[in-house]
Image (tube, rainbow, N blue to C red; front, side, top):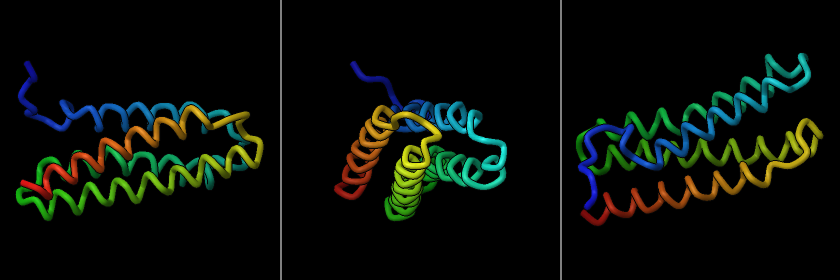
Length: 120
């Protein structure tokens, strides 16, 4: 039996994207100090935009408006993906494979949510 979704907190895609934000914060805390005002800030902002857009979209009425915000979340997710490539290439972290996998999962869930709204 599935529970009724009453809040964006109930959406697994929101939960997973929130976890991604927390992991991004943890990683960026370890960046060199010179990067805290630039790369760390940009990566954090992009990560935060994912669950924020999901939360905003959840509250909107009308499928087109909801989809607009969920697409914005996908766009922010792509920014995070690039940021993960960059921080690995800059050797600020050893590997971002796990985080890239989390991004893949969030993307799949968001796309399913968008398809579900578009078909209803």
